[in-house]
Image (cartoon, rainbow, N blue to C red; front, side, top):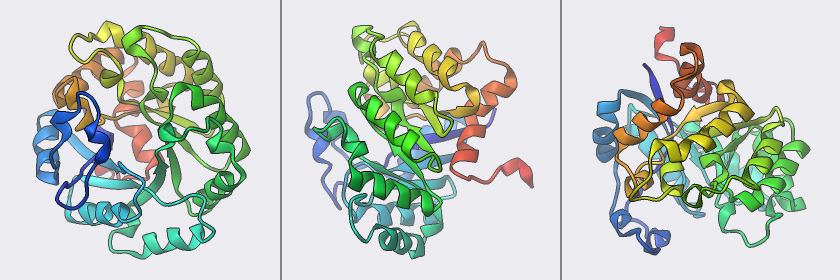
Length: 286
């Protein structure tokens, strides 16, 4: 089984604080996580490539992530950050692509979950920026909460030329075992052909101390039915996932959730979709 981890993070607290880790229960994340830590975590799982994703809305972070990709045989793509509303966004994206490692930039993400306006994604300035992302040949990763999914769907409908990648299933309320209105909103987003979803982040939306695969299954089944395996990809959300599970535990739970699918469908989720969406080289292609 070939695995591509389509979603993980790295950060160095000696370079930049990660203020979000000051939140309740997040003390285990108040340290640096570097490439050797990642390699040690993914090694037992047989991961062949990863997608490194931004953590904070800071322009200086993306060049640092690109440099990490250059130095690593494991990182195959970077999802960075830049200001979508900047008037010089096209030039900014071009500058990122011209940096050492700029070829690893395959997507852009913004911490939409922290925006107080539920319709932030459909603001004219944001839509203009999303069109620039599409024109640059990049995808757009979405980290949103359930109440922001309707705006995400409207943005995806307005820009059919842009692939929207939904992180963490849109953060359903797994810990409280509620399914609606998340499921209805998720299905409306998935109905658009330019949307895909990461099977990621579930363990930290569940009860960190007592979750089971059965707790995750209704939510996984919903996204499998809504997107289909060809528009789903595995992501660990490491090291955030370590609040609730080790790396191998996340891989094992994902395997149980997709076990009823055919081998070809499982291969899409484990690696095929991520390779296509993030344009990763296929090691079996020679």
